[in-house]
Image 1 (tube, rainbow, N blue to C red):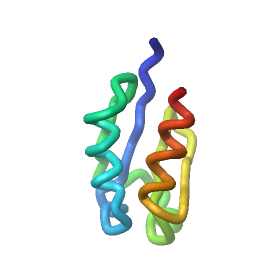
Image 2 (cartoon, one colour; image 1 turned 45 degrees about the horizontal axis):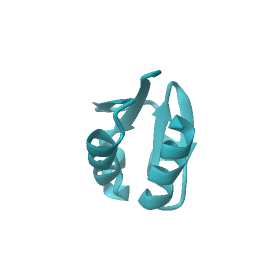
Image 3 (cartoon, rainbow, N blue to C red; image 1 turned 30 degrees about the horizontal axis):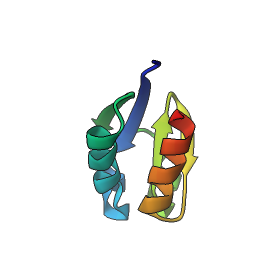
Amino acid sequence: MKTFNIQFCEHNFSHGTDKVAEKIESELVNANVEIQACLGFCDDCAASPYALVDGELIQTDTPDELYEEIKAYLT
């Protein structure tokens, strides 16, 4: 089973991505979650929830949508 690297910016936690990161860590076994101080996507970070999955930007309107998009990407 392939392991996916998922990165979150701690500045994006104000959009609820901290809960997404916790949920992924506890529910998805093929995910390696990393929390970074800054990922360099400041405009995206200020706008809405996002994460990098194996270097690919995934951005949605809500944290729940972000979780579902990441989950779909991993399967």
